Length: 125
Image 1 (cartoon, one colour):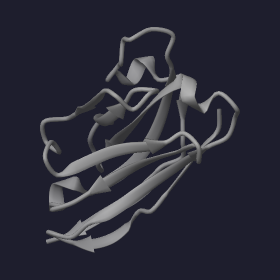
Image 2 (cartoon, helix red, strand yellow):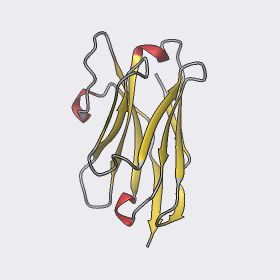
Image 3 (cartoon, helix red, strand yellow):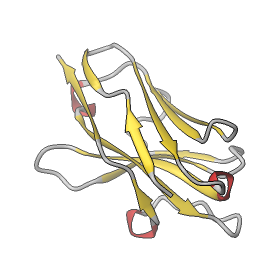
């Protein structure tokens, strides 16, 4: 699976952005999809994940209520709608895929099978 993220940019605090991540491969619907982010000087951290069916989502506490993850299996694309952005949301955002053969939906970086390239989100205060 190859992942291609897009949609990053510069936005003012309080604004919104939508990230997209398109995937190649015919088994897109077999993968849980997620977003991680890495701010300058910090370790990469979990942001959100959506199960292969779209029925289960998890969010980091820091983004809960502000970010929404969704997927369109027909378009092989996962989205991250980011609202009420804060300066501390500034980071490189990475999409990720994990093959799912069970109902377990992971939030762990170590369990990711495929990574996309990052897209930079900068929130000015």
